[in-house]
Image (cartoon, rainbow, N blue to C red; front, side):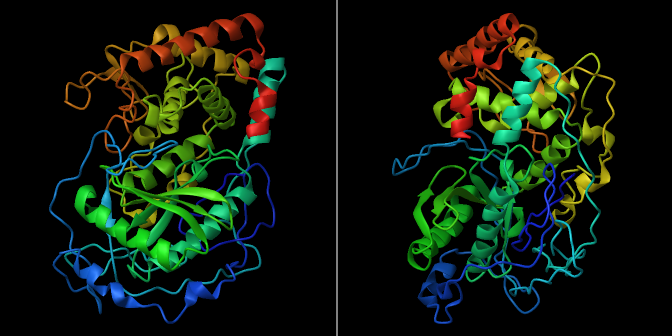
Length: 479
């Protein structure tokens, strides 16, 4: 099935699953009274004043005014207190949203509903600040079926079996969504009109059983100064986690970087989460990638095996100067777009109205529903596509002068801007145009990445056995 958005939805329980489809039913809540403790002490009211932002009237409440400070871009700096920053990090630069009244979630009607939950009203209240609109139920378009590709050779069969074993399950997604819903209610005690979004691999179709959860807290649809406003908002959230939610959240860490985050682990689901503020491009590209993931049935298995391969060879860790998972996914999509007979098109070119950076957030989730399956004349099997991917980046792609662009569906000349100078790998972010691979800033790490592409291509070409570049038993045990 072609799964639709649960982003921002109430928690759900599964009633059916087939190749990634899911149907949300009635909400399931954590059974802790602390979550709704009426004696919540607003002794931190002075913290709200510490935002030092002029208040603007919005209905019967006063949201924080948008800062005029520019967005902060560039590589993520290490934590001021040298807190560990392990794991992947996916960068986006976006806006910020804030208080009104706590909205009541509209219950799903009907005996069996699919995955689109109550999201936003389709209109904004007239005001200077565009705040997050109230919830409303959005009409749902039924997801379509997607059948996994056939595997007639050994290598393709290995890829397909690895995918079916390691892909994120509905139960994994349910755990993350349940935590997101509960955390949204708690955070709305601090910022009543805020919305908490599940983004990244958990929702874009490329998640695995071990994928962490990425959360984006939207307080306004205007840019937020990541160094001041976002950091202060996360300071309040972090304090809230440490005091009020200490029984359910463990190891909360505030990482004070250029793009600050709160890292924590949910004790109930045992899932690790990263929470950022107003990285709205992350919400947009989650649904762009989600559309690509289900556009053609070879995309998801190929991406998963390449992510596992890169992780095994230690070239999938931005915190250590190699490629983050987001860049790897864009590299796979670019390769599939640039084949002599393309397997994928540029969605942003074909459907500009669905994937424009100007589309309001409450409409972003509809994009996958509006795109029909892509029928490619390319009949290459998964094994040949994996070999071709390794060969393309080992021998064909010009790293010195070209940039990977999924938006253009081709390699384009590298820009001359400061962000692109002296960078070894240039991968264009499809919405904000930044370099998603800027973490690769050392020649030694770049050479290591290129060397792995070349060695793996030669080994796989000679043996046609996935074990020659990725030990399957070990990979399956790690999930």
